[in-house]
Image (tube, rainbow over all chains, first blue to last red; front, side, top):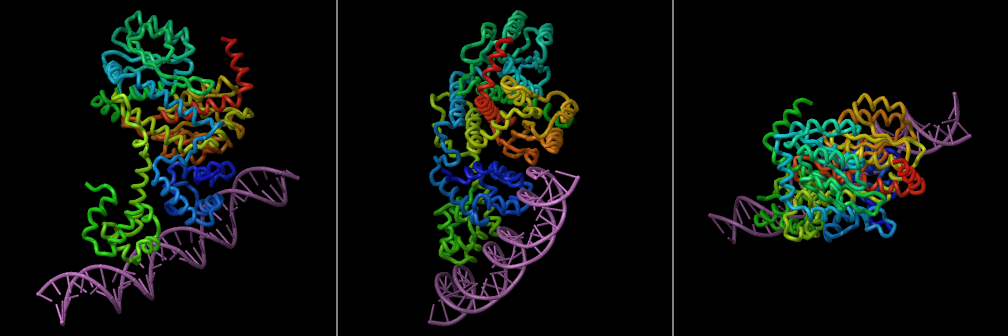
Length: 275
Length: 275
DNA sequence: CAAAATACGTAACATACGATACAGCGCTCC
DNA sequence: GGAGCGCTGTATCGTATGTTACGTATTTTG
């Protein structure tokens, strides 16, 4: 059952030639506004020629372009009347792989933030923004990209941000640079890595403040951590989801940025200048 | 402060002559759809002549009818971007001041998945699971961690998965290994990196199938991409959010895993054995 | 009540828009 | 490697659309 043009496109995009597919993607990207404009505007937006646009709408089953536009308008009108509508992506029943995953992820995030107070986040942000020490970030097998992501952003707004990459021996040697003014951000979810635990313990012994991102079963590193952020990870998949932790990380990045606004803005401008 | 055309009309409808007032009322009655149609349709719907419609829009301050329509469209687009979800979603229960960051992120994900059909994801998953070629992943300055995250997972369930890291010259040389059976997954959001665009173009010329993760402004790489995934990135922060793309990536990882279940399970067991 | 001013519609006009014919190109399949 | 097919863009065409001029109707004002 196909009720919306968006579904129609999704259904047939596979059988379309390259040019028309670009038209389809462009339309979906800013659905449905582009389709309400003229053929010329649509075509330049998609980077194809006008006839390709017309062939595209013809392939969707419309006799001409105005008919296509009317159809889009009707859809929009219906949508505006009952705002709760879900016509774009019907709640894929049964075998649908998307919705359960998305729903679970959204739930995870809500749950994660429910157990996370503003004060906690503010404290951690303040710690990360306090520039008397250095910031180190590291993660496990699947979570190291989160550490990198956070490091990439923090490094823009402040100096002395280091992502610990490569071999274990590499970053173990960096311990010598770490002291009690420094912060170590660790991402560790099941199955917890021994190497990370050992590393965290040694860092802790040196007085390093540890901020731990982990799952609801708590990495053993929690023992040594000054701040623990617990993210829900359960999703209907063979893998655990790090999405909730990712969002917390982004939130923290935003908070730290705000705190360093004065300094940060200058740094960012300087960096822009350097590029 | 007048921000919408509807307000503008309400403001001036008192000073309008009879015919134009009828036009105004007709427009308000089925706002804004009638205004997107032709002058002729508008005029018959209002029971007046075309020139009256034109005088009406002129009185509102527009130079001509198309300009008026564009304005209506912009308004609609803005309305669609921040969906009525605000009204659907109870404003964060529990009284806790949940960060607007989280709300925006959740909205972004819902919006992102609204524009993403099951079929589209299934197609991409099938392509990634098709093990006749290799899979390469790469990302931009802030999105490369997403590429790494995806690569880390895919590499567990199938061979020939490569994350392209390091210097531009490094991965440019890998082009020689790429052919038309191979897939290149690229993450690229504003501000789009020239180096990535060039790389994508060369890969495309070699017949490599490109899967692009980008934002709603569409990286120029969309030109060369076989599949384009559009994620919303707007959040109340100095940075754009990649969280929606992250969730899509996780969803894809899950889908590919399911498709490779037979092979994948064996591989995973073997790997466990090796650890 | 008369006269002027304003409002409105009819009809002619020009433009910009969608549609089409055709040629070049790349791709696939013998 | 060659022949055929399908896709795409350029250029052209017809037309629907917005626009304007002008005459008639209606209201307003002295």
